[in-house]
Image: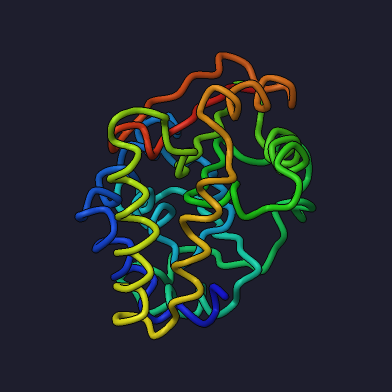
Length: 218
């Protein structure tokens, strides 16, 4: 599915979020607290936006972008600065790196797509150095408040229609709201992070509670 929408993936993200996803990715890198010349792993890197933002801030950074959607990564390799990112086909449930390798591990809109969230969180913990951070940008299960009907109309009606027009793939953008509806509330994801071994877990809600950035420390 992600391979099919790769050519219009970035454009659709900008349209769906009103361009706010760019600022969110910058926040992810700030929260990663990377040392100068440090080592970053961006899992489910897609077209590489988070990792490329980190490299823009620190040209001496060693950054790996890992994903198993090769079409997404091939799309990202055409971006400015992408030659400095180490692209790797990899599965977040079985990361091909030794223990205690990276200063931080990041992800954007990944966890609701994996079949075993706890295993992914444990794998990310394994490859991060003691004192390092995990920073996760993810759509949250929509809060039950007065805005819920408007949220559902937007994500279940407007987003699939725009997705069909822009990407030619309505089903992929029908899956998006369905996956969000079935995902975790931010406090539930924070609990899973603690159970996986992450400490100092906290999160920041964005876009009226429909998106969150979670942070944990090893």
